[in-house]
Image (spheres, rainbow, N blue to C red):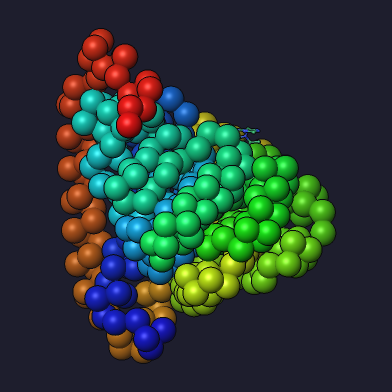
Length: 322
Ligand SMILES: Cc1ncc(C[n+]2csc(CCOP(=O)(O)OP(=O)(O)O)c2C)c(N)n1
Ligand SMILES: [Mg+2]
């Protein structure tokens, strides 16, 4: 924690608060019928995206999941552009044609949220191979869920990343469920042993503790940048909302989410840690809370009135031209 500057701490808290407010607000607006399509929320998992991405720069790439808003914000995507994308507006980051599950911004190294579970790991093998070949010094990170960790694409990617000695990091975000299936039931062996089976180092991390994630990610990312090859982080955390918006969550115990919000809240844990050590004052964080709330308000009100894509937009962005 000591090596983080005050500026870094402010950035980390601001990003985590932005993710939380963004998601809480999308939850409300979706329930009110303002948002089209299908939405998966990241609230509760903020420390993972931010703890990892604080160690990355614009040359580094990440591949996300269907639960991608937090990864986008942590990698520096424009919050208003994201909200417009979720609303399907022309001013959205992908012209309003991608929606929640396909937000991408290559200029920030955000290769995309992804509707294909286990779709991210193969993509980062490509990004990491390109960084290695071109000598950019960049690394590539895939976020993948506990469910996604069982996909063949993920295990094949572990193998490829190791045999090619790629600057690749696999972050398994284990929130305990894949849709309604508990990971305790569905994941055989252990994530760490899976990493070891492919000759990679793997570390288990408390995904509600920003500092634990930050430090674990810092070490494996530095190793990858130095040519030390891929690693895996098994990040244990919890989601606060349903699998998707509208999920009645009948598979979760009574009071499970309330208890998590009470005791496993990455923002509260962060606030407590930095206040105890005097690194940031509560008043400074309250001020950040107010400014983030204003930003999210503006993002929603601008999205509500923004125009949708036009008929002509239907035929653009279909094929890439080089
Ligand atoms: C290849 C593929 N199979 C199935 C689905 C349907 N699906 C969407 S999300 C999901 C569960 C993913 O669980 P996990 O990887 O743990 O991520 P979480 O939702 O918990 O963040 C499934 C099965 C899909 N989108 N893609
Ligand atoms: Mg999961």
